[in-house]
Length: 423
Image (cartoon, rainbow, N blue to C red; front, side):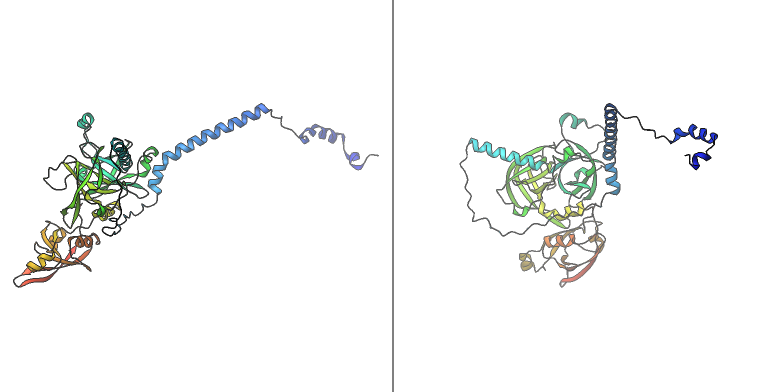
């Protein structure tokens, strides 16, 4: 029996419904064959590889710029002070020396060469950029640069301490590491008084292949170096960057003086030309001295003489952090017990000379004055004077207490000194 719905449906409606009935059908996609599916997977894989390659290239291209723009502030460089040791602490230890023969000599030289090769990783050659082609260097290998020691890594820069002779009439420098790669370097800070300069190379510029061939040198305790110790000198000793020499320490009794301080000299029997520069290492591979162009002006010595590294650490720390080294301009000497007793001189540092246009000159300090206090620190020797000066800051006003000879003997005199720098 027909229901109401069938009964009410007109022929026109029925034909219209049949006409559009195909719209209610579900259209099923044509199944994909295994071959087509594999092609789609391969196509996606290729797209992924291409995208990954471009992403990697973009990352490495932009990494140095990102490091420079958004990198963290450089870490403060702190050079550890030397530990105090008791004299003669190892005197009781017996040393068994094996009999020497040709084989033992070869083994010894092989061991020394291995240590030298490892120590070389901690030094670099620094040269000013030449405007014109350096024909002499190209043809002879003779370098006008200086050897430097890789002193610290502050997270943004690799820092290299060197003789400041390469700073004259130069504004750009090239650093060559032991793998032979050259990098542009910047002058971080210079101290003309001590003759030292700190150069920096951006970490982002240094290639991975170079990182595997370099290291930060360990600054040793040069106060432990004694006569007869075996040492090795590396650097620009003979006019080229890769010089090397072994020898022994002849003396540690010499000193070189400069304004506001002095430095022990390690004299050796290692040959070198008078203007050679380099780094002196002990046999543990620690830096014990820097070899400047000339320790004593006018000297034609053909032997390596190095400034003891322990006396330069405080200055190196200033330079590594881009800070000015405090400078007063006093050339002085310690008033010894004999002078106090025989000449009736008060204790302290006797002012031998004052650097013209220096803070000391401006404050009124004169030759013949004796300084016995800087700020709240007593001065009893040139060493304590130097230490007290290096505790100050450039631009700071410090009271120097001293004594000056008069008609009736020494009288007290004070000087207000504004600490300067010599860059």
